[in-house]
Length: 345
Image (cartoon, rainbow, N blue to C red; front, top):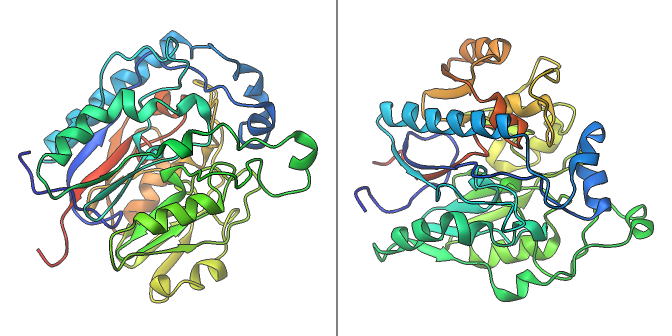
């Protein structure tokens, strides 16, 4: 490795090394109807069938946007690593390699592989990121926690009748979590329960956190919850912006780590774009950005958000990313921080 060992425990310190995903031959992720109905936009649910590729034009442009993001980050002096290119996700009955934040949780010197709830994503980390994980582990200081065999059991999905009686469509029969259901605030992680993250998953993460780190549960009001990174966004140490439709200032203030922070509700009502469609997400992807330090990467056409961030003292780097948005995420989803400069350095 040609940078200091993996070390990142917040979302805002100066970014020194990062993983950027690749779309590959991306497909709509297939899942039981109860899961699709609970999490996906109603107008696009019919698309989520086995072996259904995303439109080729959208995937091609998404790949170009990811490549451009990598180039922009390198120009900012950040070491960029990429996932395996050219994966045929149709052949593997998978989804995409564009969203590494879903599958890899970096806490200090530890990388924890997600125990995905969606079975179509079960091979995603192995196919797209295994060689990089092996490379990162070579320094002898980076700790890699791979998904255990017991967490591949196909036992999570409950039937639709029971699904109406409980908050989430997965049960607690084995650990399940997506790494994107967590945000890092130094020694404290804030996480949420969701349709892809259960109590067994929370317990699993607590077991594997480095010493002195702790996980706290944030109370959110989101019946379709799946990933926290369009709900809260720490822009810098002491400043957090949030989606007031999903979380309250009271819920945020309940956590000691945020007691002295400035909490700013997002002041706009984001709208769905006409083209390309947001097949898997809401327009609240406006909060799904990548903070580099004093700079933040935002979608090139999102002028309102960029202007607001600038009014809060941030410098915005505008990048086109609408086609990546279309296949399921934005800048936070499409990256994983490998090294952030600690304030003591």
